[in-house]
Amino acid sequence: MFRQVPNALTASRLLLAGVFFAMLAYYQNEGGRGHGDVLWLNSALIIYLVALVTDFLDGYLARRWKVEGVFGRVVDPFVDKVLVLGSFIFFAGKNFTVPWISPEGFRQSVTTITGVVPWMVVVILARELLVTSLRGSMEEMGEAFGAQLSGKLKMGFQSVTILVILIFVNYRDRLDDGLLRDATLLRDICIWGTLAITVASGIMYVQKAVALFHKHGQIRP
Image 1 (spheres, helix red, strand yellow):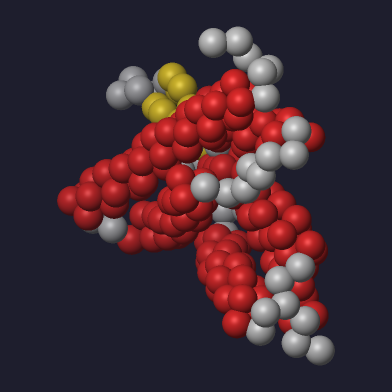
Image 2 (image 1 turned 180 degrees about the horizontal axis):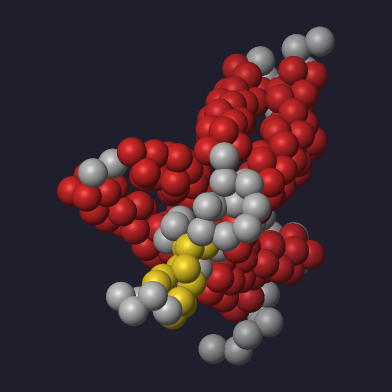
């Protein structure tokens, strides 16, 4: 019985991710056509918080009850990546855009209220695809290529940044100009910090892979 609880929590997080994305997909900022009711964002924030709790609990319970298995090792990081990558994709999408209007009243450009733009998502996605490819190559050679500390820190930063962005988007209309500037600065620091540790983590994995390739004679010094 105990063995199934962590796995059930992991599976439930995948379902929560689906509901979370549905909320983000249905919401649209008032700057465009669609549904700008903040209720959707409030609901998305609650669902994301529940997903974070289950992410902690499934690993904690699996270790405490000594029921770690293949399902958790494979599905847990998969669900984490789905939730993180999906969140950033939505944050860079049209649902969170606002038009920038010139003083003359002309629409000049479009910006996101989340602070996330498409190239940032490309960087995050590219890192994940690269590390996954390297992990597959290493395991074919019989080398362990599990998660490093930098990878765990990266996931932690990404998860916190998503939470910060959700809170910012939920409450930005209630802040005065001074608090809005501070909140925007905090949001941007989190985003750029996440990008920095994502790139740094990817470089560390590449360095480890190159060393292993040298070891197996795949790369000549």
